[in-house]
Amino acid sequence: MDIAIIVEGKNDRSRLRRVLQEDVPVFITYGTPGSSQLETLRKQVGDRQVYLFMDNDSSGRRIRGLLRDLFPDAEHLYTRRGYPGVESTPESYLIEQLEKAGLDSYIVYPDPSSIPFNKEDFD
Image 1 (cartoon, rainbow, N blue to C red):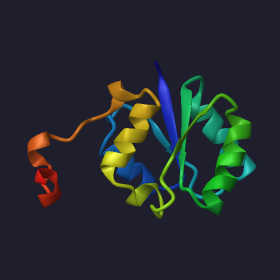
Image 2: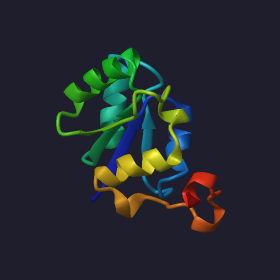
Image 3: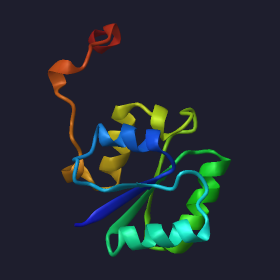
């Protein structure tokens, strides 16, 4: 499967890069895209399967709506309401959302020995 993920900003892309294989293209809208930017994005994405990962706020919903029209077959990934945006979503939650979308083969899982333990893990 040849995929592309579209996010709103550079920080969103940086955050996703931490949990995705480096060859997965992650495109940025840089906020609400205009018509020429949408056309450029359409050309860049080509015939890849598109995944939209926008913030769960009014701006993210507006951008998602524009991209839904451009990529009607796109899969939609969501952050939880309590997270300010993709860039501040915990990596574990990003991984969970990517797994739900069936993108396991593109995920770079953290080394279990590098994950700090919480006291609650042993209760």
